[in-house]
Image 1 (cartoon, rainbow, N blue to C red):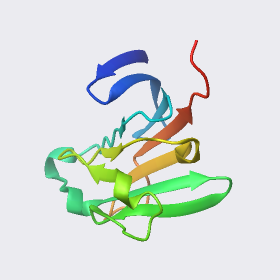
Image 2 (cartoon, rainbow, N blue to C red):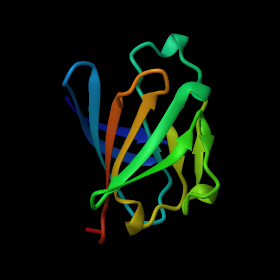
Image 3 (tube, rainbow, N blue to C red):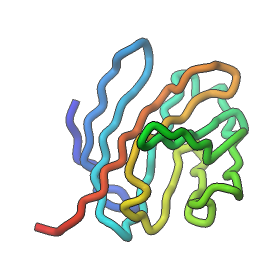
Length: 126
């Protein structure tokens, strides 16, 4: 399914595909300086609290946990620009080229990531 979503945090161009079980995959394209909302779509969200959600950032073979148990880790270089919405989606304010990469959210009790978001930063305007 391809979608263009107009959201208060900017325009999101993306696609979602269900594969590998109930995992969801999104590709987002944003401009530097934008605020972006990364969705976390846990399958049993009605029973999930954000205190049960982790967010991981992956780029160039490196993994970094930005959110553990629903709390932004202050040791993260992006900590001042990260926050969680009440539905556990991750907000990154004032994105930069360094924010590009794969993000994943998952339910703490399970050992897999439910939602994978590939954040792409556009380098020029057309």
